[in-house]
Amino acid sequence: MTTELTTLLWIIGSSILMCVLALVGVTTLSLTDKALHRLLLPLVALSAGSLLGGAFFHMIPESLEKIGTDTTVYMYVVGGFAFFLLLEQLLHWHHCHREDTHCVKPQTYLILIGDGIHNFIGGIAVAGTFLIDIRLGISTWLAAAAHEVPQEIGDFGVLVHGGWSRKKALLLNFLSASTFLLGGLFTYIFSFSDWIYYLIPFAAGNFIYIGASDLIPEVNKHESFSRNILHFCCFCIGILVLLVLRIIFSG
Image (cartoon, rainbow, N blue to C red; front, side, top):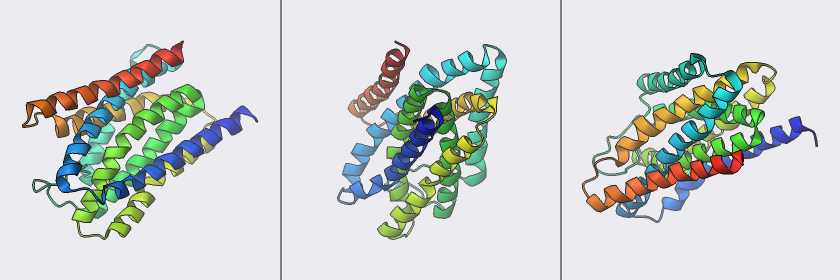
């Protein structure tokens, strides 16, 4: 099997798995609001640590190795951060990770559009890392997947809370996630240029923005001291998992 075909299979396989994660919301159907609340926030903290660990331990170091140590890498990191800030501002993209009385009823179609764009860009970023190194692609995918689980659970709750049936919410959430595969295939088709290297720091900026701006505020300053400690521990576990992967892959 050629290297190109192997890489394509990794891209397609990982993209399909990411799409399947969109169906994770079905596992919450039997949970009470209180149980969902207690389960979801530790997962959000874990995903925040995973995203930051993936950006700082894998993507930025790889960018410096491929592009160089000049300011270009950091400009792309900041550019990726700013782009997703703009995306949220334009689309009112809101990840409501908690389905409670304090969660404002959102515009469900805007959420799907925002998630579709986000997943398409995520597919581009992950596929770009697979094209450079399979090991980097795996670690980037794991960090992205850790974020997708609480996001998809939260989005499912938001869509149902917005008045849609559970079946319709699952179907449209899955279709929105399928743009991840489109992004991966788009990247593979146009992977004939060195521009692919610049996707890594851009995606790192994306990971840093989501982890620091979108997820950490969800789990920060909980009313319970024990829950704060639990969230911090989950956050650290997410970071440590990506650090261990970095050590293993560098060995």
